[in-house]
Length: 159
Ligand SMILES: Cc1cc2nc3c(=O)[nH]c(=O)nc-3n(C[C@H](O)[C@H](O)[C@H](O)COP(=O)(O)O)c2cc1C
Image (cartoon, rainbow, N blue to C red; front, top):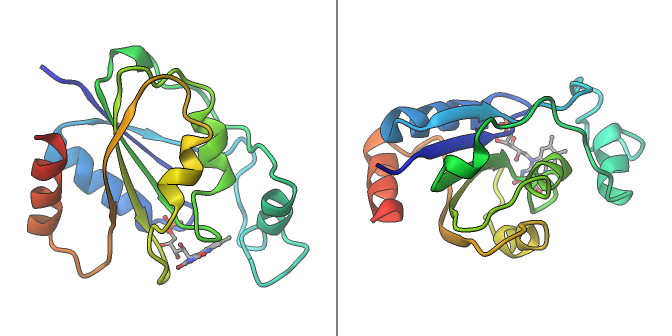
């Protein structure tokens, strides 16, 4: 039987809800990608040029993650979710991703955003994904998406 991991980062809770829904639909194991230094409200105020999120973005900084996924090699499929930050995945997701060997994995990307699409998010992430893997599907999840929409997406992504 295929083993599914649902790994996600969420600063404000939107992506967390979607990750929980995907875990329920797929039976996949949840892993929250948490920063060692939690983000405060001020940290993620992108309107302030001196805020942490802007410094991380501009400095292309790594964002250390709490813990590791146990037995990562035993998962066949990884659902990887995050909010869109600056039209792509947040730096912490890049840091998480480059720490593992993705050989043989199917990857399903999902994201939430204010309004942006996924655009070149997958292409940018590829830079950090080691090993011979395949991004098989991706979805920008909107609040209006029903659980039937999510189920249909999962069925299509996993077939
Ligand atoms: C630092 C930062 C950058 C963001 N950049 C974008 C963006 O480029 N495009 C967009 O549509 N939304 C952007 N947003 C909004 C988030 O993508 C959106 O609120 C998302 O649903 C938050 O997910 P979360 O609750 O799981 O953290 C940004 C939010 C933050 C905090």
